[in-house]
Length: 161
Ligand SMILES: Cc1cc2nc3c(=O)[nH]c(=O)nc-3n(C[C@H](O)[C@H](O)[C@H](O)COP(=O)(O)O)c2cc1C
Image (cartoon, rainbow, N blue to C red; front, top):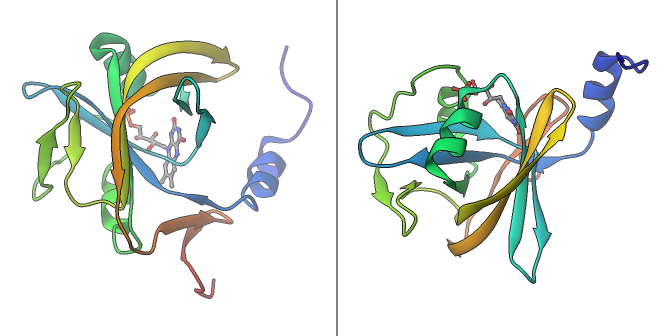
């Protein structure tokens, strides 16, 4: 059954819910994949779970199903270019991006504000998206301003539209 609420209205209304911006990464040294995501939430502390929503058409979905792990890298205020770069479909350009391998084997962005590394716990169907739940196995954070997404565009703390 198709929805009765206008998709444009939903996008605009929910766009008033400000979020950070992350790059989700998966794979290993031979095959790595990355995707910009802001539909990210901390789900549970015991056990330690996070979730994000993924468009079922995105290749990242297949990549995570194959590798069974992923990392959520939180972008800093000056990393808008990376957000745009990893929001393009298809193989990603990692040129100039410093990576290191996490304990799950997933690539981690060395330069980011914070990250969690996860083993894939489970997925749930969610309409045209899928809810991906990960169990956190490692993570760290640092001081700095985040990149924000609000009203369909990037913002920084205290910035004007
Ligand atoms: C700020 C921003 C946030 C995004 N958040 C999500 C998200 O939470 N989930 C999602 O599936 N796609 C999201 N996207 C879109 C994906 O990054 C985009 O579809 C990407 O090309 C998917 O790559 P893939 O098809 O190679 O996996 C977002 C894009 C931007 C610019």
